[in-house]
Image 1 (tube, one colour):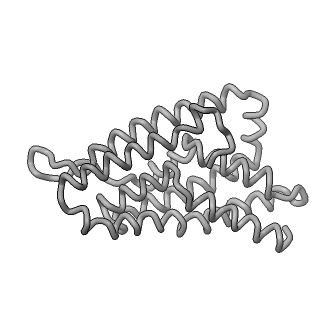
Image 2 (spheres, helix red, strand yellow; image 1 turned 135 degrees about the vertical axis):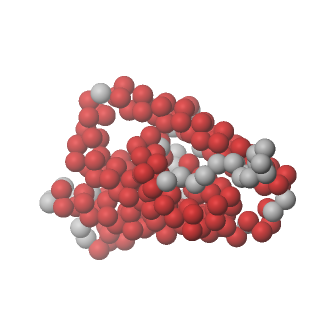
Image 3 (tube, helix red, strand yellow; image 1 turned 60 degrees about the vertical axis):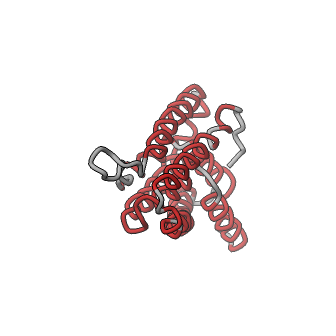
Length: 204
């Protein structure tokens, strides 16, 4: 991989990782509701899960979707259904239960890693990275390099959303304000599904 291609790829990885999407909306809400420390497994799970997804796409899974497009469509709609479920949970997070405690809990490492496989934006990012930035010479080595670099760029990028959420915690101490914030985050998460239902593959 040339230096120019490497710089271009790092820029691509940063922009696609830091811009709004399902992962970042959930991390912003997690930062508000649980803080940075309790959200760390969620952050690391995203990066590792996405790295494995990029490797899988590069090593043949992408070709399977080209041969059987129905599988990709099915995956997108399963992902959309799960995102709607997550949006509902986010809308409910922070609301007091009957004992006055806080509902919900942060994503675990494994939950966050597994979520990448049904995250529509993650698939678009992974396919874009492999098809656009991976040289054919020493292809397998380059796939592994691209996957590792993407994870390294992704983790601090999504971490910015977690820290932003944590900084908002003091401003959202009022339960009603917090509930309104969570509902807003849930609506934004639902809005991130628009590219799926509009069938706009290039929207990140």
